[in-house]
Image (cartoon, rainbow, N blue to C red; front, side, top):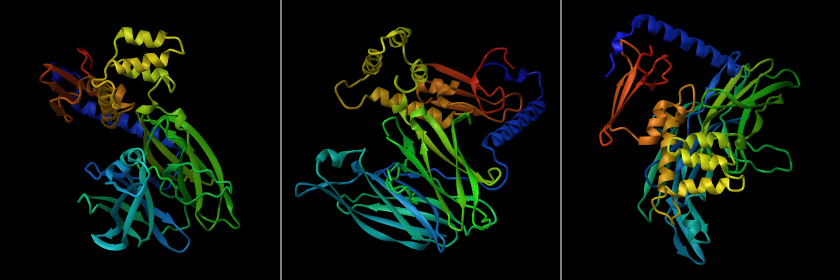
Length: 437
């Protein structure tokens, strides 16, 4: 292993330099967001259950003129429910318990007996179709927990999820932006905006074939006479905090909360994590809110950002395969793309290409864990993880006093080790380069 202690610069000087760089980076990010002053709220990610029955929930405060309330969204894929034949279709029955807790004491909630009917076995087993329900509960102010239990008596399956919710009695001397809810865009000829999406997208994972996706929120602000026009700015930020899309709208601030609806340009976005940032104010944004979402692997195609898609598969493709795809006639490129994945399918003829699924699971992991000043799949650790999978052993030295932080990844069966060094102090671990300081 290289002698990391031979760095000529002292550890104290390095730490001071890293601190200065981080400070400058933080200042730059604040400038990018356009935050003048005021609250900067961030919505927590939705809660997902990874054991059966698998389902997702999202919860948050919603405003009304005379009461405090919490909305709880529940989404359960049909494939997680037990459907039984009944009449000319299939029926699934389960109990849905939704409660609000303060210090483990119930302050609101109830039990609902639910029934889902479908006409075909395919719909009953579908992972694309789902049960969706939004419940609105009265709530006291303070920090609460929304607890959701799904219980099937017939199968004996039961699962529970919790999510924290902050409920606030908002003053009217400043701007506030409400929780951001995602859902499928709905056509409304009246031009009115519903307070919540009718068809929620709780997972916040969108794809090229998702259809239109919208975000709902509300704005409160200080009332000035009969009403004053405020500016709403919203941006889509990528993993490098660069603006992928920006737009704005004007609203007249009155006594009641003003609903806003934002159409997410998913056709312009590619694989990876993004943030929706909303700012509101009279002269400049004085309140902001941020919510994260992901674009899935369906955006990796030759029809959707082909240059990035080809760059991604270079980790596993041969030079001949890349040349075949790049040089194919436009009408034949998609066939070459599909043939690339088919050649790696361990079970041809089945619905799932296990190799492709595993590849994108690794890409997703890389984006979630190694995205520092760039998408995780482009990082050195992401590249190694995508090519070789999770290491058998990781030796991490984040507080190395004799030099920069570093990690050692070991793959026993492959008899390979990789050394990653955080040269610049931003957490961007790079493969060790001899002689680099």
